[in-house]
Structure formats: C-alpha cells, structure tokens
Amino acid sequence: MLEVTDLACLKGDRLLFRGLALRLAPGAMLRVAGPNGVGKTSLLRLLTGLTEPEAGTVSWCGVPLRRERENFHRALFYLGHAAALNDMLSALENLRFACAAAGDEEVDEAACVRALERIGLGAQLDLPARVLSQGQRRRVGLARLFLASARPLWVLDEPFTALDVHAVADLAGTLGAHCAAGGMVVLTTHQEAPFAQPPDVLDVGRYAC
Amino acid sequence: MLSAFLAVLRRDLLLAWRGRADLLVTLAFFVVVVCLFPFGVGAETNQLRAIAPGVLWVAALLASLLALHRLFAQDHADGTLEQLLLSSEPAVLWVLAKICAFWLTTGLPLVLAAPALALLFDIEEGALPVLTLSLALGTPILALLGAVGAALTLGVRGGGMLLALLVLPLYVPVLIFGAGAVEAWLGGSGAAAHLLLLGGGLAGALALAPWACAAALRIAME
Image (cartoon, rainbow over all chains, first blue to last red; front, side):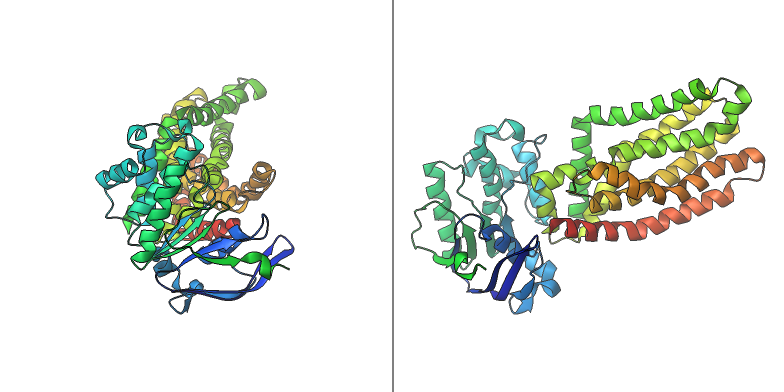
C-alpha cells in the first residue's frame, strides 16, 4: 500500500504544491490530473523515489521509502516521459536490457518476444529503435507491462501518448485487469481512455501554491 | 545479483562496438598528440628519450578525458539512467559495470598502443613492460575518478569544460607515479615502488569511486 502525507514539491526555487496527501490500496487506480506545469510528473517522480520531497513522506507498506528503497523498487514499475530506448539497439535488445537491468532475472528472450508480439511489434523485433515511430517506441516501453505483472505498483507518466485508438483500448484493458488482480496503478493522462471502471481522480491543482 | 552488472556490461560493450568510430577517434587523438611532440621539440634523440614517458602519459590522460563526457550523457538523455536508478539491484554494481565497459573500450586500446608509440621515441626496450604496466594500472584510476566527475557534471550547461577542470587536478598524482615509474626504471632505481603506489591507488579508487559516482547520479536526477 502506498501512502503519502503532507507532501510538498520544490522545483528550482518555486514551490509547486504542498499539503498533498493520498492513499492507494490494492486494486485501486488513480489518475493524477491538472493543467500543464502543475507538477504531475514531479509528483510521479516523488512517488517512485527518484527525487526527494521538500517536505512530507512517501511510504510503502507503512515504511518510508528512504528506508525501504530496494524492496520498494522490486514492487515498482515506472514508465517515464522518456521511453528509455537506445537508438542503436533493436526493440528486442532494448526490452531484454530493461528487464535485466530492473532485476527481473526470470525474464528470458522468449518472454520478451511474446510481450513485443502481444503489443503489436512482432514485425519490428530486430529493427533499431531509431527507425521506430513515436507510437512504436511507446509500445516497446509498454511491452514491459506484460513482464511486470509480479510488480504490484505501476506508475505511468502519460502512457497513452502517441498510441492509436486500438492500442489505447488494449492498454486500458491491461491496466484494468492489473487492478482487478490486486495491483495498483497511478497514471497521468490528458486523454479520455475507455476504462471499465473509471479511476479515482487526484487534482494536483487543488494543492498548488 | 550479478544480472544487472552483466546486462549493463554486455550492453555497453555492444553499443561501443556499434559506435566504434567514436572509439577510433579517441585512439587517433592519442596517436596524433604523441606524434606532435617530436615536431615541436625537435628530433634530438636524447631529448626525445627523456620526455617520452611524460608525453605518453599526458597524451593518454587527455585522450581518456576526451571520451569521458559520453559515459552517462546518452543514458541520461534517453531515460535509461532513471530506469537503472529504479532497479532493485544496488546502483554500485551497474555503475561499476559502466566504468568497466568504458575502460575496456577507451583505456585498454591506449595501453596496447602505447608501447608501439614509445618506440618512436627510442625508449629502451626493457622499459616498455614498465610503461605498459603503469598505464594498465593507471588508466583504470583515470576512468574511476573521471566517472565521478562525469556524474557530477551531468546535465550541466558547458559540462565538458567543467568536467576537465574538475577532473584534471585529481589526475595529477596518477600522472606523477605513472610517468615516474618509467623514469625510475630508466634511472636504475627500479619501478616497484611507483607501481605498488599505483596499484594501491587503483584499489582505493575501485573501493570508493563507484559509491561516489552512484550518489552523484542520484543528485543529478533531482
């Protein structure tokens, strides 16, 4: 369970938001909303432990992140703005590296191939990432979702960007299924996605300074 | 535990191979700088013999500095660094893997090319193993210290110049003992003391630099 109390975020010398609190129980999906520049991405980065909050705490299963880093990162899947793809490696090589680097030792090449085929990149396995379109690059990053079902907490920054209508519907279904199985999802999006159950909404603008 | 180390090492070596033109530039820079000195100071044999260890060491130091800014820049730009920092494996391991790959692709070629270049300066043949050994012990220290500098200047505007200013003073002891080893051997007092000090420096850098580097990378994410 992810719990956030009295969180404040400083960017440069500007206070983005303060007093933000949230609680995410297993099975919950949370959509972080608000206009551009309000601090949605900054909030997600705070939730993952990539950055330290100016004030307040983020805790995982009741323990503050700072003391729980390794266990927490084993339970977390984060997809940032950047797709984390190297242009000189193929889609398959990128995905295999992402899994190995994250510590998913049990993921083998066959599983990576299946994940890429499932997300619709079966024909692009061996193409270098630099020739893929924006939507296809996004899909390579999202293919890790199929290999990360053992990780309960998914934090996704604009996962629907650059995807076509079918892919958006598929992804919404995958996220819904993850929550139905007891997982947790935090995402930001400006798009309307066809979720079976509408997610809770947290408006960061309410806590803006 | 080792999976992240091996994955990063394998990937960085593969990337180095696919972008091998960049590596040749480092090596060519080393060769060109070394070859410039005889033109500058004249082809007097005794003089060339005397300056050879210093010239080779300074050139190796500058060449390894040249490639240093590439160490984390690409991973920082494309988001890979974020994902690595979120790995459940300890950051020290994959940082060490990146430094290892960096040394294998930029430091090792310099070590191998140095004896051939030393012949241009008519160094005594017996001194060549000492030169090679001093570079083999010294260039990994340069890579380890440089990696800390590269991590600290990550994402800073004009980071390349700042990196040189930050790292070059730290390279001075390595240069003194590295070039000194060859000179001591030529002077007849034996190179053991210098080489042992370099070895000690390498052990110390190996133990401390990856931690410092990992901490600097976390700061760069803020």
